[in-house]
Length: 125
Image (cartoon, rainbow, N blue to C red; front, side, top):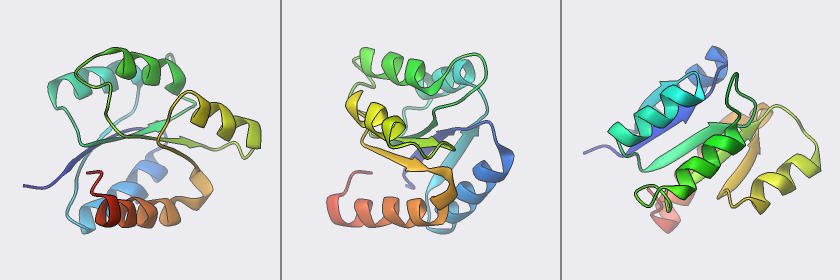
């Protein structure tokens, strides 16, 4: 059974790229464009990994992160945060709140490879 990944990202190009690479490697990816729908999807289909954009319309990624961590059913869900901003302070904030990793959208192909390596080595998924 393929491992499930939910991606909450509002940019279709980014979603398409990540989905393409991960599905090619055998993962099942569900992409959602906003936070409220993403939280509903997480509850209905508990994933093995959440890929979460920080800057989303209506509800930002940090709020989604807090809600996921506050729920005992999803508190230990691995989360990789994405951002278009390259500021080191943004990365520090993402990691300080407890994200498993925090990556720039500009390095998505590397990110996808990193997820695959992490899964092979650490069996996070």
